[in-house]
Amino acid sequence: MSKPGFILGSSARADLLEIWTYISADSENRADRVIARLLDAFARVAENPGIGHLRENLWQSRLRFWTVSPYIVAYLKDTAPVEIIGVIHGARLLESLLRQRMEGPSSSEDE
Image (cartoon, rainbow, N blue to C red; front, side, top):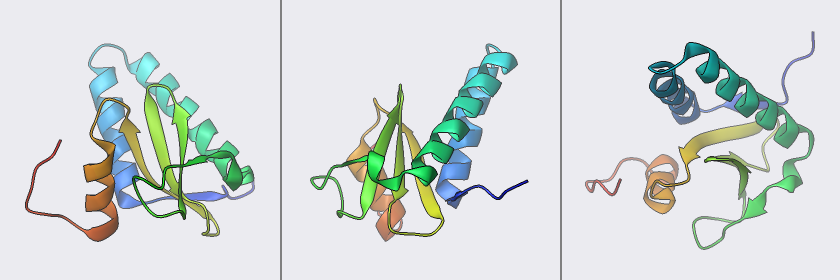
């Protein structure tokens, strides 16, 4: 068995747990399918790190984004293996969440 070409940062692991917990309240099978779809997306990004799009208005150019509707996967494109730093619902305030994850916690609650 080969190792995945990605690693999950602690925030990304927490995001996956939060997503699974939320969805599993209605259906554990659906929650499992959503997590499997996200893990497949992580593997695809790892195989082709350039496929994500840049959002320099949100963060540095080394950070890329890949949409797995309704979630946005944020990852560092220049790490080996690729580092997944977050899996964020598209309705959330992406900029403030990323700033907290990349710089550390701040005193404001922008979510």
